[in-house]
Image (cartoon, rainbow, N blue to C red; front, side, top):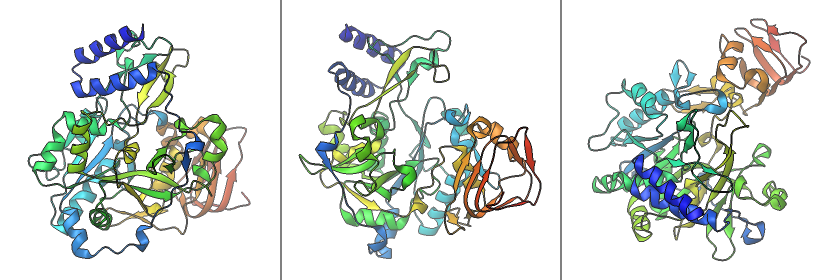
Amino acid sequence: MASKALDRARNKMSDAGVDPTAIEVFAHYFRLLELGETGKIPESTIEPHEMDSLADVTVPDDVATEAIRHTAVIKLNGGLGTSMGMDRAKSLLCVRRGLSFLDIIARQVLHLRAEYDAPLPLMFMNSFRTSADTMAALERYDALPVEGLPLEFLQNKEPKLLVGSLEPVRHDKDPSLEWCPPGHGDLYTALLGTGLLDKLIDAGYRHVFVSNSDNLGAVPDARVAGWFAQSGAPFAIEAVRRTPSDRKGGHFARRKVDGRIVLRESAQTLDSDREALADLARHRYMSTNNLWFDTAAMKAALVARDGVLGLPLIRNEKSVDPADPSTPKVIQIETAMGAAIEIFDGATTIEVGRDRFVPVKTTDDLLVLRSDVYDIGTDFVLDRAAADVPYVGLDPDFFRFVGEFDKRFPDGAPSLREATSFVVDGDWTFERGVQVKGEVALQKPDVARRVAAASVLGPED
């Protein structure tokens, strides 16, 4: 019976030392699964959501400075980059000038501390798979830790459940694959369970800025901090306009029944609503996963709900071993941290520029970031040097994994500053100083080919 399966899952988590609050949160979602909850948000229950733009908001300098001095920064850093062939923290990837994501994040924060005379503590929410590598890489930054606060805290883990029985799965070949993170919605549970939320409140930090470690555009900007402080909102998310490449992704909406802002992810969309999901004129805004919350408001919400915020369930079906589709099918219970927007009265959103949303999810994104489309200034903030960010599509058979990608760009990325799109089909290697201009599509060659050093590729190539 499923209730016995829950008991076994609870015991497994307890034996592994998982925080009791995290176990109760897991049990809450397990019961929803038992009841057949899918976490779907039908189009008929929502309407479009509109918002102000940061560009139209006035934030006095003194308000911005005061706000950033009472802000703490959390970077989500639990991902391994497995989709790019990595077996360690994605944030360790070299991005530019020999610097990794972690290096640039650390230097951004250190620069802002000096600029605003602000403590601006930086903390990483690591997973059990990323902690050791991340902390070793940060040892070189002696000034990064802030007294009384840790440089990292760990997200929780939970058992994967067999589809059908909901029994915690066993995988003797690699027992670590029996576990998964609960999605980044676990942030709030982890902050409560570790006591870190209380430490932040006691130390006088009123606001927390959270973002993904693979988004170097997500700088803890004083102007955004000032906007959040003067808004009086308990919770806010930065949004950007959706583009054609975002059609399949999530978006903001308003729930008809109570007018609250909700975040509908692709996995929460009915198949019959896919056309509405892709309608960029109807649902115009998507989340950057850059969010701000008031520490006192978050503590009050967690206490009122006994540590269970009750974020919408995301039911994620996968194979036990993601690299082996023949292994048993399992359910991973997940939640999205941005979904907390529907919990708070007065929660809000703000439209920001795409310069605050530069995620790296694929090697296509990585090539753009490593190219001359971007510069990095003395403040370690990304500056876009090109008029527009070009579309890049690299053949996944040869470029998907970082190791193969690096072999084919042995001397660094080509110049993409004057490119509109760059599509590569087949096995191509690019020597030093290649320039791409306009729309370039390289067709699949019969044998592996090289693009000679200093070549200029144009629309006719």
